Length: 111
Image 1: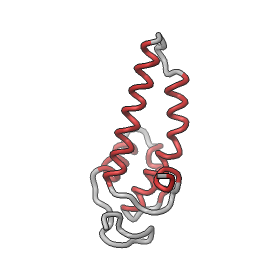
Image 2: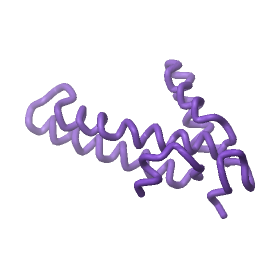
Image 3: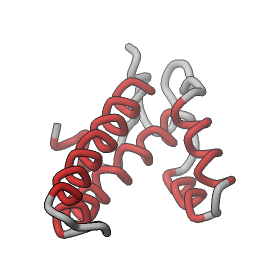
């Protein structure tokens, strides 16, 4: 798990990518609901803290997904392009299969 969440090396397929992102959204929803139930109308300490601590694992997961597509991890920067960049990253990382067999970033995570 430590390798998956904190290392920028290697490859992952779509399943861990989606599991991580769904878990991220669920936990963020829970923290937001807790904050709204105590009267906060804006993101509070829980939500901001969770986003802060999930930033590095989010980058690591996405970099490994770009690696599976046989692209540099620097492609993660496409997320900085408003709307189009995020859509591109979701389509490429979430819906397109990775390189079959070994590539320059490691062996095929599907076996």
